Length: 361
Image 1: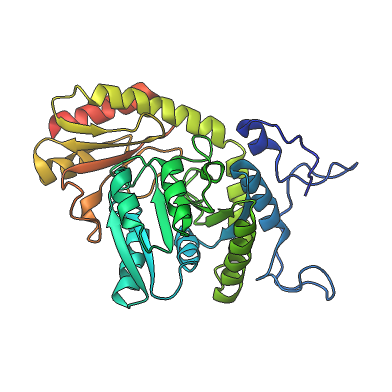
Image 2: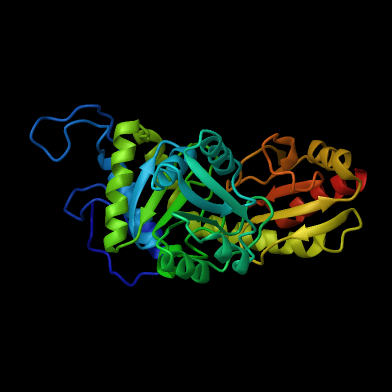
């Protein structure tokens, strides 16, 4: 891939320029989609489970954006599993009470199997997290949290974890590297569900990790790459190519969706059918607690017309979901909480649709 772009580019410029082929006469401007399982012997890669030029293009772009070295995985859950494998057998992991549901599920499975001791804590309570870190091997940070949108003091938590020798992994899916870059705050590994804001079109399932440009980061990168190789958690080149194409406009999508979310959060704060609005002041996800309990929240989801009642988030379309429909969601998530993934539609259309559904609930 072309490594000639300047080092001091803004994120928007990196999204457009990184991961491109070398600028030689007659070359295409886009990274090629390479479909092969096998390579001629004696090259850098001999089998596609170990590498693919389409992966390399995506990894270069994401790595440049986060300030580290990226690896693409078959799914966000594959990336979560790989990152959690960095904790030793029967090690201690400190993780948020509220987090991506898949993360909570795999932590629960590992704890039930006796492979990890898991300490769940309010990640926005720095003192509580620090107290839980004694004897910990890995700190898992998610900020904002899913779906409660609690915000962590990432630099403070990283410093406390490193003082105790723990590895720090930060799920940056919600904030995106356009808002925060945890590696710059000292984190060792960043994890993404690429399915969400990075690819942004609800048409791929992928995950990624990015490791810090430090001695520890390079060692963790080798371990993550080995995990991907031997566990077969590899991404399809078609999906990876689509994700890279989606990333080219990520800054435009996230800017528009964030502007829409800010408007909606402010208006929802004064809505008679809304008990509480959760919005950290950035990003494109808003959570609301609906007056009338579970049934009212379900009616809102069923009544919207422009919004789509569906799980997931981060696409161009606006989605709404009552999270406690998911049986493994923590009981501390209110039954009447709706997670709104705000898209790039006209904000007045989104407001009219949601306002009507809330009033009818």
